[in-house]
Length: 99
Image (cartoon, rainbow, N blue to C red; front, side, top):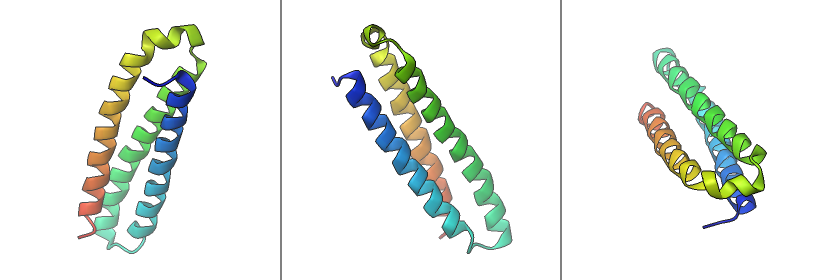
């Protein structure tokens, strides 16, 4: 198991990756037809909400006292794993609209 700082760095890297992916998808959406663009924008809003949720979770961990890290790490990892699956599903739905 990683230390709190290592875990926070991993979450930050994942959030940065998602933000980059979101930017690429936004750029790609600019070339889509209007009806597809509307559907993509709805999915992008959902994806942005998930990114915000991840950022909020990271902030909660950041603000937790170091001695509380051991108490919350398993729950934090479980919630993050669920969020990763949810984000991947959203990204896959958006990407499928480009085909």
